[in-house]
Each structure stands twice: as C-alpha cells, then as structure tokens.
Amino acid sequence: MAPSLCDSAFARKGVDALISYATNQDSNNDIQLIIHTEKKLGIKKDYIPRVIPLKHNKMSKVKDMRILLITKDPANKYRDVLTSNELTSDTFKEIISVKNLKRRFRGSKLTSLYKEFDMVVADFRVHHLLPAILGSRFYHSSKKTPYMVRINKEVKHKGAKMDETIDPVYLKAQLKSICRNTSYMPNEDNCINVKVGFVSTHTAKQILENIQDVIEFLSDKNMKPSGGVIKGSIKSLQVKTASSASIPIYQYNENKEKNIPNDRLVL
Image 1 (cartoon, rainbow, N blue to C red):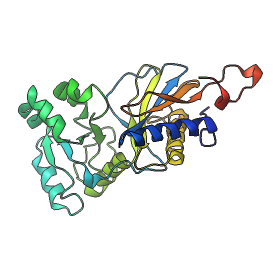
Image 2 (cartoon, one colour; image 1 turned 45 degrees about the vertical axis):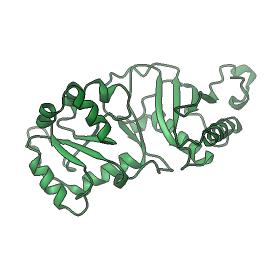
Image 3 (tube, rainbow, N blue to C red; image 1 turned 60 degrees about the vertical axis):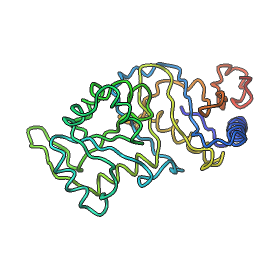
Image 4 (cartoon, rainbow, N blue to C red; image 1 turned 90 degrees about the vertical axis):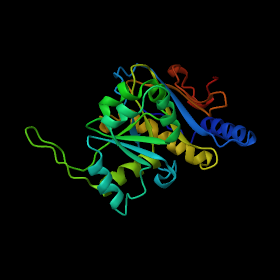
C-alpha cells in the first residue's frame, strides 16, 4: 500500500527544508524523489521512459524545448507533414531518420548531439535501435534517454499492414504529456528516482501532492504496464536536488506492535 504523505508533518518538514536550502543557494534545481522498495522490481531494463501523470504538471512546455524526432527511413515524409502543419511547424528543431542518425553521428559528434537538444523522441518502430546508435552518452542516466512516441493512434492487428498515416495532433499531444508530467525507467533493483517538481515553480504542498501521485501510480497494479511496478512495501522516501544531501520524508514502520506513526520515526 502506498503511504499517504500529504498530511504528514514529517514529510512537509523535509520538503520545506529542501526548498529553503535550494532557495538560499539561489538554485533553480529540480527536486528528485528517491524511492527504496522492500523487494526488487525485477524488470529488465528496456530503456523506455514511462510517463507518470501529475496533479501539478508544470514541469516544462513543448515550446521551450529543443526537440529531436527520430523516424523511420526516409524522414522526408514525416518532415514534410509535420513542418507544414500549423500545430507542429516549429515543434521540432530537427527531424532525422534512424539511418541518417547512424551515419552522421559517431564518436565526439554524439556529444555535440547530446548538448544540442533538450529532449529526444523516436518513432516506436525504431526506438529499440537507439541504444546501440546513441550509446552511453544518452543512456548513462535518464536525463536525455529518448522517449517513445507513435505517429498515429492506430493499433496494428496481427496480419494487418501498419498504418503509415502521420497525425500531428496526436503526436503533439504525446509531447505535451511528456513535457508537462514526469517519467521513470523501471529497473531490476529496489530504487527508483523520479523528478517531482522545481524549487522555483512548485510549493511544498504541490511537491507533496506530486510525490503522492508518483507513489500511487507506481504502486497501483491497475496502472500496469506503465505503472504498478512496486512489489511489496515502500521502505523509504527521500527528496534532494542536484547539490543537496538526501532528506528523508518517509520511513516504513516495521515496529507494528508499538504502532509508532511513520512521521515520528527516528531516521
């Protein structure tokens, strides 16, 4: 069962302390939630970020992002449709086919590519090829791991030909969801890191409500396959920025016979 944090004085104190520290440091750092689970997730890494919907989804805006779209070959048909549509005409800084990506960017050029874009998205039909092409520069952390998108809503049925229609409206909606919300990548271990807000954008109450959204999404089996990955209990929750120490906001109470409230545990 996911712990309830919104009314926890201990959790509020921890988030307040983190925001106070980051503000005094004149920092605009994002706030990361670190989740330690009782059991290992046991999910083989597939390098596919899963989007987690948030109540206070003010993470970023599509118009502020430098976005790279990676498509099937050739890229011209995607580029022609998307750049000529008013909704997506200036959405992508670059649209490139997976074949040209592999040909043009190797070695030090991958570092330049990494720095040039804020976000990378790829057609789901070529997404699985990217780890071998982009390498550790993009996959050493989840910061710029490519997101998987679909070019239309159609679901391919067995034996049916794939619909190649390009739907700018549906594609833009996916980008908005990615930018506004947060995401995570499942792994085999018992630790998950998720961005839950920004110091300058969210209040402590909003951060706590976003954290609640995250842990409920990850704990609810009805959210599978994207969510519902946590098995057993959540052992602890901590928050931090890039420059701060981890601050505990929840610790699982194993001393049930004494019925000590979670927010009174000594951490």
